[in-house]
Image 1: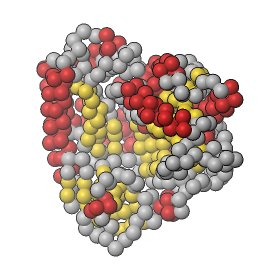
Image 2: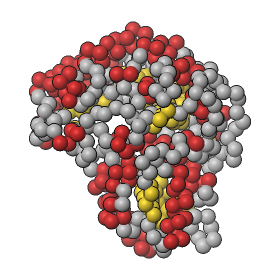
Image 3: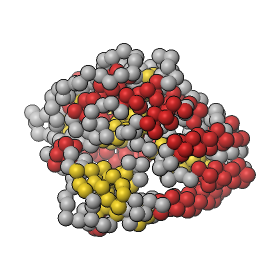
Image 4: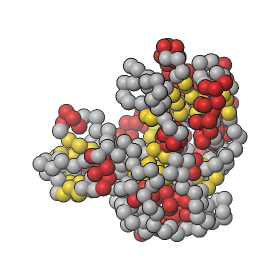
Length: 495
């Protein structure tokens, strides 16, 4: 492995852990680095700068980071001038402790000052000393920063950062701060810029997307934003994550049902089906309200695929509480679920609660939850057999594709589809119509000849090795409306 040659542009590599927000932040970090003259390191090469974009929510996040930093130390010793930077939620939480535990780290930056990274790297190099800069509040909205997108066909668009909720198991509000909403004109300008580059699918991203508008006093702003996305030329699919049941309103359901490019897929976190546990979690809804939302969504969109998050083993959870969760799961009929065993997160109220459960109890309930969910998701997927689905061809969704001769992608409802290509040669970013022939708990197969293959500009971009690169977009007033057409992003596409 080699680093960049003397006199060549310095190279970088970003390692990402955690949620969709972190993935999108890493696109911002890549854009910043390239704007500052760095070049992404080739596979197999040792980068001149390695950036860890960390998570503080997942179990053992700190052990994973410090373990990886330890593995990288010998490489740094062999390559004088190499720099290591640590950012993200764990950096915001641990601050200067990171350089105490790993003194070979050069830069520590937080969730509120991503834009300072190139300056901090230069300062650390000049001073030959670690630079730690953690801000308590957002300096600039991340979407004003340049972005190097990872996909030619799908893009994240951040509509807000931070969270105003106080869930007792979650450390995110203390690390990302109170909710700050981006202006609708800025959001739509970025969506327009992406579709100009050929992107077909956009996911609107926030810690709590459907509380969007709280900053400028419009509680219906999110539904209006969805409808406005329906008027963006070339935008075929709109998704969003994650909403919160307490803020989910009927106007959003209507916007989803009535806006043709908004996908009938909804991720609605449940966390627990027990009202007593929901109260202890400070989740300001109860199971009846939750199931009422699901009922309204299905009445408006019978084909909607609904996914969720569930935590098992929250402090004080009884067997009766767990059975209440199973009851809601059976009534909601989720198409899939992200499931978690509760574990302590230092700094959260739940970590100090009485009634912490033994690992064996949590594991037993988790196993039973998984079994119940798999029965339901398999039954729901079997209903798809014989249906024609529109699949946006993706990269990396099918681990067995090379062996089976299939390709993979997502249907409009978000389900994963592995499909036979027949005599066609679709590319990631192209759109395939095919018929479902088989269902498993977590995916669908379509093994017949595709009905049609539509070649797209996103597929052209993938074949040419290009990915969208958008500049920072910062314009518009807090009103919802489709912006005037924008030129292609400055600087063109990068390889």
